[in-house]
Length: 172
Image (tube, rainbow, N blue to C red):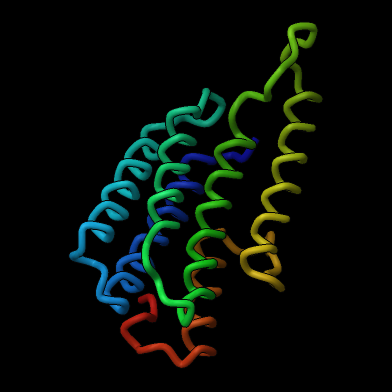
């Protein structure tokens, strides 16, 4: 398990918030019913995540993260911001991966919890998460030397610069 999975997942989720707000502001959706619903769904997921403890069941957290993704995916975002939308969704997929990998492994009735089952679960989740992130952000290379939060911010800022989006889209 990740030594500090709750803090890792929460810091990444917190880093996603300004990008959501920048995207919603840039597309004039921040104060619309859809934008407010997305922010509310994000906030509910963040609070649940901050209250979750690594090694415990995360069903509620995962449901709220999925609910945020569902609301976010219904936003009428223009295709011109698709790369930024995908970076946000990849960040959320990474949070889901961290939470899932650091929750108890699903067991069949014949299995018992032991370190090999949990380790295998974590490896499987990491591979699946990396594949989902690659679909959303092709060419993304995960680094073991940088936090997920740092990698998210760098990917966002690089995409903003490459896409010539407004400076207000840059993360501070």
